[in-house]
Length: 312
Image 1 (cartoon, rainbow, N blue to C red):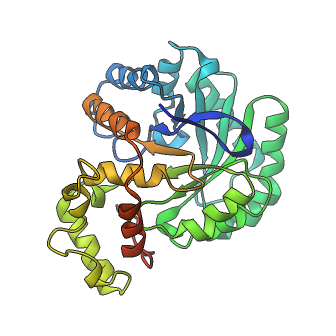
Image 2: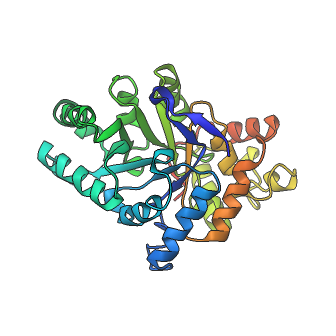
């Protein structure tokens, strides 16, 4: 497993992180797994060298993560969790109560990275002025180590909130939507994150369009119709087939993870699953070398103007 410094936090994080949300939620979304099986899945990842786990109040998986980390050395595990932001702005009291509940469910007395979850551009001023000071107080109290913020990418495709946040000097870690279908965060977010030494977690590296052939084809067609892809750049019948045919990757999903992993400024790529075999396959992916430079360049060329999809 490869490890990277998570920006100025100095935390050494595994480049592959366990994502306890997403469509699977460790197998709990549709009760695919028992809680014991989901705990075992987290332990399988930890024992393979993953040391970064991302969960959230909204995912309802904090207790499962807590049951797993309680069986390993907590000091060697990095926990990222998040406070849900609903329609109305939360108060400082609600923030503190939410953190207390997360600590209880996780069975720990501190959180390594505590995020405001899905912050929208129009909410930014309130949370920056009213809630960030409370986060700093909680940091001083030893309840959290570093302060983070995640975007609501599907509702903020232009990354407007994070484009402000990376210039603000208060956020140690951010979570940004980025994948080979939509690389728009490279200029609007990642460049400034590198300059300001901010830790970067990548979400949406894989979604349905990068794991389901029919969804990929429909996504490519929508990007061609909108003028975001030049049809001369891609095989519409078998989009992205060159990734496998060239021998660069055993699958499109494999290439998609590695593309994100080696993007400058990216530190942890979140990977979620409820399936042990899928977890093992993803571990194998992250152990592979970088994609060939010509393949990476081709992917950047094809999707250079794409900005309207998340891959979901």
